[in-house]
Image 1 (cartoon, rainbow, N blue to C red):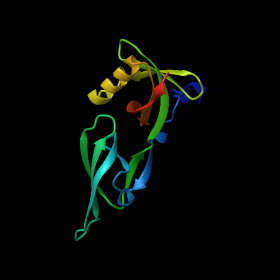
Image 2 (tube, rainbow, N blue to C red):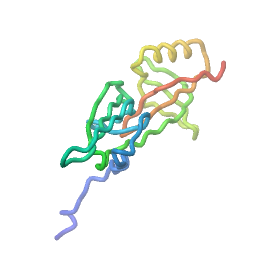
Image 3 (cartoon, helix red, strand yellow):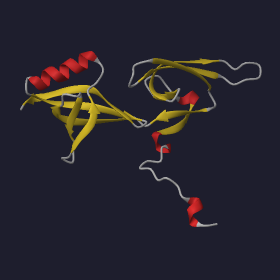
Image 4 (spheres, helix red, strand yellow):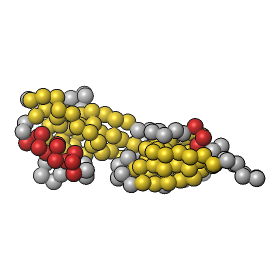
Length: 159
């Protein structure tokens, strides 16, 4: 067996760290869950009683945190569900490019230029108007399962 047979493509992140397992019966409303490979915020949980031979089942209704689509899933309460690692980070807005990307200032002083403007019209107009008026804006970026999106906006005063 030579070394060439054991060559693996190395990637920056392992992928397994995007979610962690949690027992379905312990997931509550306003928590997070992965439904159909999408990170969702749980808006409704109902538990059915055990059948003659079965498990109690949890019925989850979740809203996708990036697309706002409603997703549902039914899981036996003793089984594990995937729960996404959801992070919120605040960045200061530096610039908006013509092609719809934003330039953000990170805590370390670098720039982050790979994020698009949000698809939510209300948030989009607030960001564009505030930037046009020369306000100092801080955007909250939510990230989960390798996706990132601007989800909130704060005005920290004039420049």
